[in-house]
Image 1: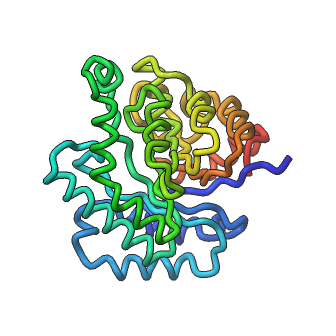
Image 2: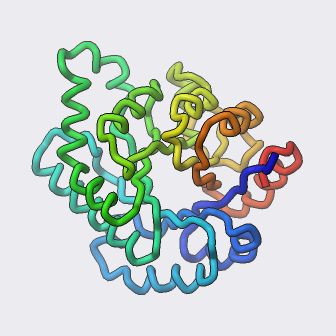
Length: 271
């Protein structure tokens, strides 16, 4: 069995540091220099050109983390829907500039939703329609560009909520992302299922995974092995689904990349 190849989520400044490692197996790269309002509302062309230069000759898959600060794609306010739609367009502009085939966006589901969506008649359908009103144009544009938007779990407790939302769009340009640390926090703190259940639930719709560790109390983004995620179970679940998602280390301290790789390699989980 061929072990999955691991990549990383990096800012431009870190691409140079890990360039040789990224190129040795043409690892997946997630560019994380383009998600803030300050960057998107400025002239980011030089930043994009720098990323392209640093990745020149790289044959792996490239994605970006899209905008997410300060809003939800499930907003019901038409004015905010227009603002979020603009942010999505800005992110897709970046994808075009850097040759990215994937953009990470954030799930709208909160812990409050988990306990209340079935308490309010029609609330689940309204959430889906709010999301469609907010990012529907971006999904259509992504289809035309050959880009896939991947929806990452944030506060999600029931992983099926996100799956049903993605299925509601019925588009090749909207798929599922899993953040292992977010899922483990939800499991330990809010009673969600364990991380491998998130993988099994996503199944063939899983196109992206953020790999990070924690103890289940907070969103630590620790080096793999420092927390309490059951990584053997996670990678067994990944091997059992019919999907080849981008698998990227998303660590707060990027110097933990070599230690994370040693942890996975020593256990025969990934390369």
